[in-house]
Length: 364
Length: 89
Image (cartoon, rainbow over all chains, first blue to last red; front, side, top):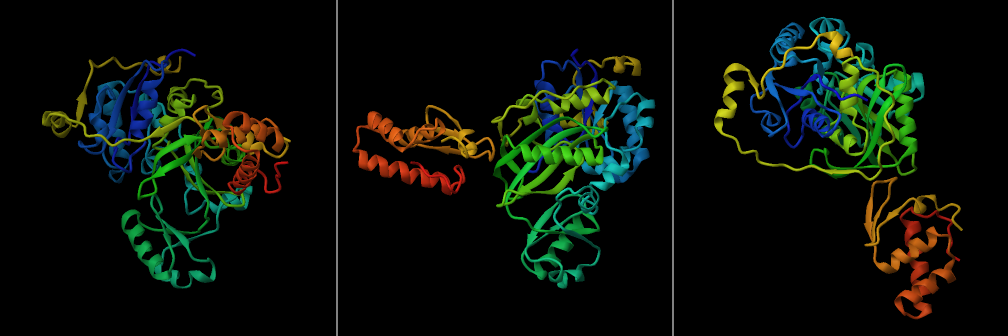
């Protein structure tokens, strides 16, 4: 396949101990010999660590938080298109997608390609509705209940056996062993992410993850399963390895097929002691370990960039089992002037600006 | 002899004794004795053949080796790498 020469904008450049997927997406693009394009980082804060990694970006821009609304975001993206000639956008945060799903036509009119789920797909995979996959398609999903009233926790034992998982609507999960603990978790998650709160049956076992891209027709462009080898206190993977697990891949195929998922996603799965699989969550974007897919021979971010540019992408070759990652936390030494452009102007150009390509060129 | 040992047969074993289980993602380190036993079971060898291989390699009494091999096979069963009904005979 020809080299990819477009300009890709990537969000989610936070890279703390709970990193966004933006930097790993860019690292995956950079490590491919087939990537000959430019990368523009879209950040919410001038201090986002991904803005300062040497060699990562060709330019950067601040964008408004999702709470500012779609119009503000699209105005900024239109500016990014003019300023940096971005051809493709890979959003990597859940909260960004509601403003983008079902608006590919507007983005396309700007000259920006995306490869995203529909709003209906995005809504169906939400924690509050995941059980519909079990009901309608037989996907093994732990029982759950959607709550807006914390007092329900004092009668939840009638429906669930403690411990239970108390989850925020976007992020966050806490295992609770009592009603009091569950009420506290309700308020904590609600304060951070709003309502509703989801109570989910707790399933003990090994946590497994799959990073994948659905083609929108019910098939997989690629999928890489991973077992976390080391966790942070927040339960985030700090090291992991690709594994051979055909039942897990069957589950991924079942989910993507049932939803006709379009775009990147991550499945969070538990394999219990009996060897049964339970789908805990579907994240509607790449995970922060997605550069492992490139290390394992399936460069999912590059495939996504090609699809967003309108290229035809065949299913990727088999991934390599035993590819591992170990995350590192490093201090990036920069002069304070490195903050200046983003803080004052809201953008930074690290290379001479290339002229914007036309949609026809992007699709070629 | 190899029937029913799919999990064990999939282990990737390096000459240093570093083992990767591609299904669980787990890694183990074993000594030369244990590696010889695992490789013997992978190759479908019976207890006598494994004891002979150990004896050739480590010059230890056959009684000890037989006991060690059986004990290690039990350990592999406990770890789920061999079926619960597997017997090294």
